[in-house]
Image (cartoon, rainbow, N blue to C red; front, side, top):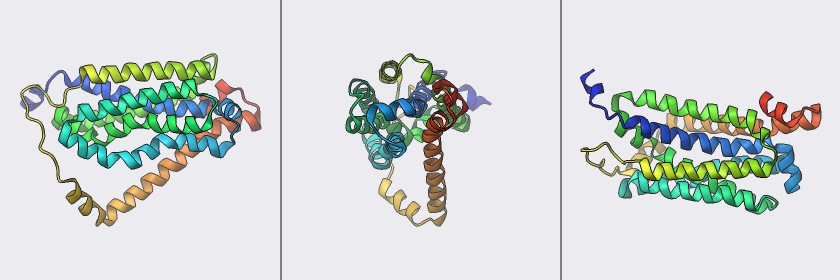
Length: 253
């Protein structure tokens, strides 16, 4: 109990901003699903193209996670995630301004994934530094924010008057989130030293030799891919096959 009292009260601000980044990342991804039919019509693509758009932010994590973790050890989590968030905000506005170009939409969705990929790669560092023995609680809140954002994106994105407006609001909100991170994030609580850099390659080699790690990664990857593909297509299928209106289809999904 004494240790818990020593935890900085500022940790709740850190958790709020971290959860907001997670919320916006999922919202910007899954609002594409909610507007599926409109997106396909606007870009002249089929369900496969829509799924590709949805998967782009996840593809970002494939390429960025290890470099983001390594760079954060050297330069600090705040700087690395700040750069990622700025690029995500740029991607959000690019998606809005070039809404009729499929190639640009692919690029913008990839950029939108930069912020959350950089954060996820360093989530244990951030929450562990600030919450210590309460890290499990903080991680639970973080993933709850992720689920809530998906629900809100599917259920309420289409209540905006047009796809353009929906994208613009999301881009502005992402820019505000980036600003909050830049202004309020601190790498460690006051008075604590920066954590020592970890031997990343050493740990990668250990993980690569573990059969359990590979099984968990494969199961998680397949589950995430199938769930994302399902959520991407279902609202559009309800509209096109069952004649359900856009808002109701998003809520049902």
